[in-house]
Image (cartoon, rainbow, N blue to C red; front, side, top):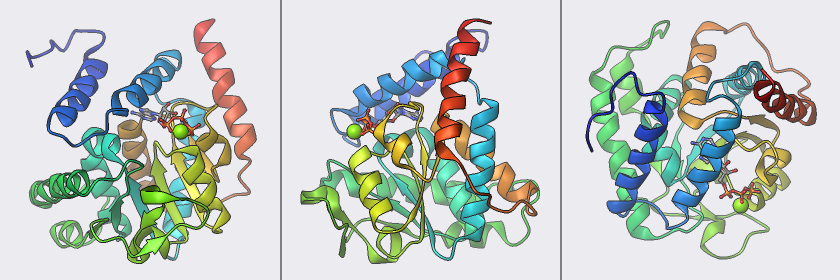
Length: 261
Ligand code: ATP
Ligand code: MG
């Protein structure tokens, strides 16, 4: 793809689109991936393509809940890997938790392709400088991130078919799941299992957004960057009695505020 000049007002959006296009042509994404991305883009446009105050608060709450969790896991689908895979690995390295590739339209070849992309990024990230504020051995922490999903050995109750499959080492045995771009049905099933479900979804009206314990209404790569900063800079913050319905209403209001600016 031709280089997009820094001055182009739609630079980030065009680059993200290209990542989805490239991921599709490499066979890593389901056909519906572009539709899901387009829906996200539309909501991001309405939010001014920036992290809102409400999204920041939800990311702060999610960081605190992930830090407090006994067995946190980051569940990723194809769009999340191609748009924000590196961010997911940084979070997992800081939390010392696994990443599980969990696809709604699961095929063994897509799962393998996405796992190998994440493994490649682990190699690259383990050579980079630790993020500011990180204490410990960054290379060891990145190397230690397990990428799961290849051999499902657990079934999520209440779901049928391949979309119910996951691993006991990851989602199955977890108490807290950070899951961007999740489907409403699966989000509901995870909640029914008694897990805390932290969703990243640009659409504050989606079923996932409404089912989740905490919803971060933000673009996934921006949200991961914000959560990382809270994990490293804000260690004293403890989880609160989070009112997710109130937070979603605020996100909707921010769309209205942005449009009337
Ligand atoms: P639900 O099943 O929760 O009602 P849906 O069926 O409308 O949602 P899905 O296709 O299941 O949508 O999931 C895709 C969701 O991910 C959409 O709500 C979309 O807004 C959101 N989304 C897409 N791209 C991004 C992105 N880059 N960052 C954050 N959210 C995104
Ligand atoms: Mg859905």
